[in-house]
Amino acid sequence: MHTRFDTLDGWLAHCERLHPRNIDMGLERVRAVAQRLGLHFSCPVITVAGTNGKGSTCAMLEAVALQAGYRTGVYTSPHLVHFEERCRIHGEIVPAGDLLPHFEAVERARTAGDEVSLTYFEFTTLAILHLMSQSRLDVAILEVGLGGRLDATNVVDADCAVITSIDIDHTEFLGPDRESIGREKAGIMRTGRPVIVGDPMAPQSVIDHAREIGADLWRFGHDFNYSGDKQQWAWAGRGRRYAGLAYPALRGANQLVNASGALAALEALRERLPINAQAVRAGLALVELPGRFQIVPGQPTLVLDVAHNPHSVAALTANLDAMGFFPTTHAVFGAMADKDLAPMLARIGPVIDRWYFTSLPTPRAETAAVLQQKWNAVQMAAGGRRPVTTSLHASPEQALAAAVAAADPADRIVVFGSFYTVGGVLQHGTPRLEAKHLASPQAPAA
Image (cartoon, rainbow, N blue to C red):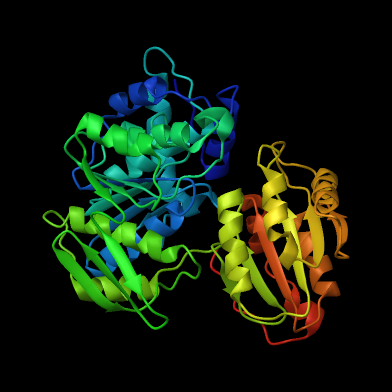
């Protein structure tokens, strides 16, 4: 007799108890349960791996495909506020109740015969893949959780693989440098099928693996490219061009690289998934993704960004620089203990005047006090020339409230770091209305 739960929270708690480790690299267990489930997709599948830009790329693929009239399914992780955000069908977040039978199907398959132990990520991934496989989709878009080769999403043979930017992150699982990390990401490629490599400086390991297995390699700068000025941009790929495009609705320095990779993937699948120029224009103009250089209207200016490694923090810093002058920039920051914090703090430090370090509700997180110590060490190494104030907070919500209380209307508040940091702020709304008696800001869609 297998276990049953009547709520999504019940199932998620069950998933957390099943396996002794959060992350257990390897596909044998996931593949065994997927085979018992008979997991199969009858539509094209696009799998997206990379250190940064995965979520944005998935959102752009989805937005353009929706505008072309296709029924889309998207799986992304982690979520900002609610678990259900991880799955969208035809542009809509799947209701919790719709997920329950698929969690039950995974549990039934997992316990049929020899019981298979699955991590939280593996179990929940299989449940969402099972739902997507039965949702009569025209295209399925899967964001890789960690790495690629051994990630649970890789039990599905993608019709097109996309590899976005590659940088140093999760070194304990993926290796110490870009070449070894690239090798792990390259594991989502399939022989004879297109792989879109969007990183302009792709590790040689990625190129080599594509050639070794005979994948159809599309390289940024070789097989596709973009150009642009301040008003508009253009994309060119194998035998196709789009000119006079408006900039993507997602803000930020790297979004043209992400958009270029997304368009290359759609071009590579054109025989099965034809897309017209109007769908490209409308999709890129309408794409939304909370927590990616998201500017919430109101005063003081509020910027939300899930930048949590040196590469993404460098992009966030460039984007903040491009915003213009603010008298004071306040930063709410919380991060996981395994992150390379010193280069992140050193990079963004020059644009921050006041820090509000926060602890997070997970044992993997660094404490606010340790974040402050690491900042102090970075300051000392830089000569500590600029006076910067710091404070410690128990939660992102409390840290933001303190920043709001201290900020003038003309200031800027940046909330960045872990998904828990940005999610913690989104979960409780933004307290600027009460604190400043200003016009109510639009609450961002969580």
